[in-house]
Image (cartoon, rainbow, N blue to C red; front, side, top):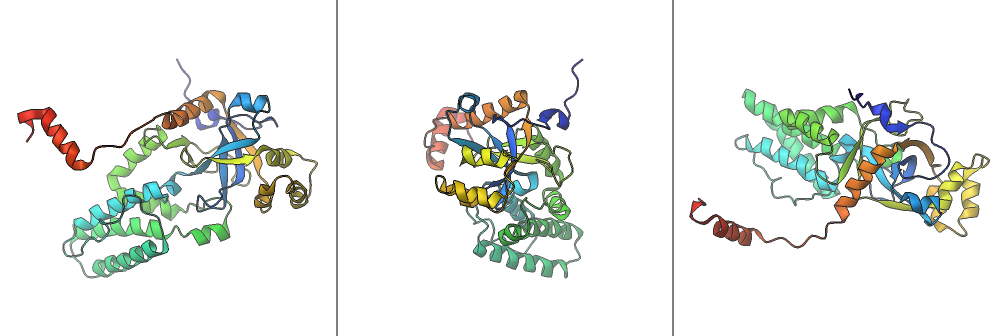
Length: 311
């Protein structure tokens, strides 16, 4: 009988100082790609390049909490689509969210639009007596509040790791209703698209955890950093981190970007699980792909293939 795999079985909790694929570091700067200025990251640089010192950089995939994923540009549209579906069930309120682009950036203008819509829903809630209408409005407002709570300024100023409040989790559950459990099942099973990989919490106290909560590695957001800076970060003889970076900045200007927080190797994903992550990451990029037919051409081709059976 095969022993069950538990979250703690995925990680080595005391990795050595050598660089290996699967190393998980904390406080890796995100260079403006994400809401938080720093996050955890997992190394994906090939093992042979690291063991023979053929690489001058470490390449990381950022790791973010599961719930934070739904504030990324690629997933915001999923939240907005669900909000639109809820609003369509309410007579007379209107749905001006359906015309948003398929990938919606949480810009100041969009947040303003969502805030206005939130106010309209709250006003309608105060006047309606219809049970189903109230249910749909509550679900819609939960989704809008989730997005409005993702103010990038507050994250940048208050935290070095994305702060996922319990209310954020409940808002997504409220919005998606009975769809939420299947979405979570797909995320945990790595069946929710090709662009993310699930990594469970390492179960350690938050003060020194590498992955403090269930998270996703982002395949489309790789970040490379000079390896010498992460060698410095592991040098325990260095007590004055800003001074060490100031010296390193002469040969490596990127050192200035690490001054606020000293990165730390917290964990290592075990080899069997690193292999799975890397194979999925590579498969995303080995596709050559080609432009797709437009909707009209595709419908015509489908009709021709289906013949008279197509209604």
